[in-house]
Image (cartoon, rainbow, N blue to C red; front, side, top):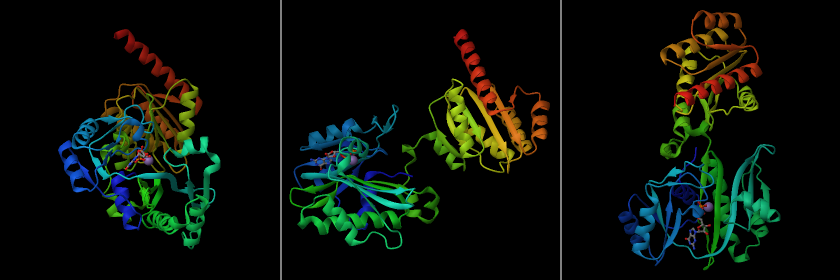
Length: 396
Ligand code: GDP
Ligand code: MN
């Protein structure tokens, strides 16, 4: 789960990380008022969306007058800001953060991520901050510092000092840098975050280290024990298809194509996406129904897949071990009947109780195509989808 920049800053501040002062605004008038509460003759108006790279998209504006603030706020609010992280549909701006402006002398990059090979948190830092980490690794790969944290002792001051020195920071800045680095690590550890990114962490003209931007992502499986984090969720920033499915306990990821998929097992689900592509189609989603899926759960999966208005055909692919093909088939039949499904539907069942499953599908009298292998299923669903689409075109 992601949160907004201002929420991330508030959390990091509690762990001793220095952040600029600021306030939230929902209207241009409020933005002006927030700026007046801050000292200084300049402020920054920042669109609060779950995305980085807002600056390049016009979502971060340094302002020096009330008019400029109102202007920037008016432009941002209600806009679907498109950054290279949001996809073409963009993300709706309905909150702004108005901050005191910072006098930047140097921009650093500081990130904390899980390294799955090391099975540890690794700190990634660079003296070439401001640009995205992907660009740093492409343009300035030698500037990247990596430091693995031993979970038994956590981030120690000496290790933070080493990172700070490797960044080439002035000796006078080291204590502040140590405070920032250890603070970020503690936030990650104590809040069950999966990522902390401060880009840029800046050195100001007056020799202060300040987190100018902040991104925190959280482990959703740990939210039950972090109600104060769970509360920071902003559904307006999420893919509505994913919100719908995930709220119902389904493992679903929205994609851009037109062929909906219902599969058991994450590995098989990924293989299914590949097979659809190889057959010349584009999958609309990833969906793993899990083990021991009841007919109700299968019905729910159909609802989640059909919640995407782009879906024009459905492929069900089950390799039943813990699952039971008869339960799946029952769910499929119920879904077709209750949801009045008219689009092409291809079902491939294999494994436990497959004969019973096939029988239920065959005796239902419904228009369900069956397939014996994954390749056959993918080819059939793509072929049927193409035929259906050609018919649509004829009618139109
Ligand atoms: P992002 O584009 O979504 O990553 O948003 P950031 O918060 O990182 O801001 C983008 C860029 O705007 C930063 O890298 C800075 O160069 C600039 N910026 C942000 N805040 C300030 C500020 O207070 N003063 C100045 N001069 N520049 C700022
Ligand atoms: Mn940034």
